[in-house]
Length: 252
Image 1: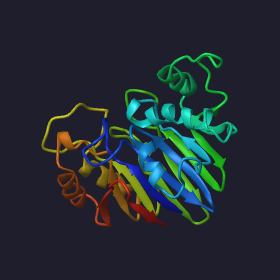
Image 2: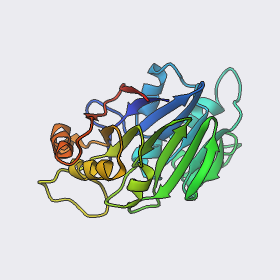
Image 3: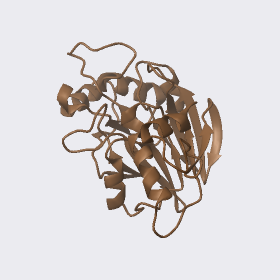
Image 4: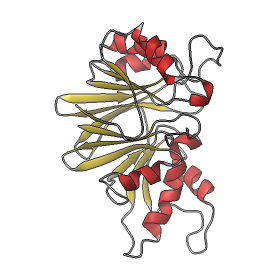
């Protein structure tokens, strides 16, 4: 598998990154994991280009994870080369309605997204997407949110999505080759409970899950230096750790 970071900023776009969006690729199939603000610009710089995505998984319906799924409707609905078949899109209950509401009603199509997306509602469990086996589980966030595990052959990655402390991460990240885990807050600053993790907490979960590699993501630079998150994680996880950045690629 190859994982490409289109964006890794949390809550709102950062000074050097769009919001959360990642391409997971194997056997020529590209799965887009979240589609946050600004990610479509980065997608156009990626070899996939505008039309190289085969399916989308949205972890939850906060704007910093779905906004460009709304903008992307223009790409597929009004391409001068012709319409495209509906793209499989997996998301929490109400994903299609939320995207349609942000996009707004339009003459001839009303508020529907059915011509652009084949929307499938996520439920905890495992399912196939292209060559991947995907497992999702509820995590700890104010709206329905799913952490994601993606397997291909003998390799696996996990994505925390947005979450506060939850034991669900240990199962999702068990023995993965790469654990992409959010680290939005810092240990030495007060922060709301049940919303996001610190780097130290991300490291704890990586250790408990026996993850082989930890990549921290979902940084809010206006709230703190990601480098401090990295140092915190090194106190709780002895394996390889790095900070995600827009344009990064990981092979597992």
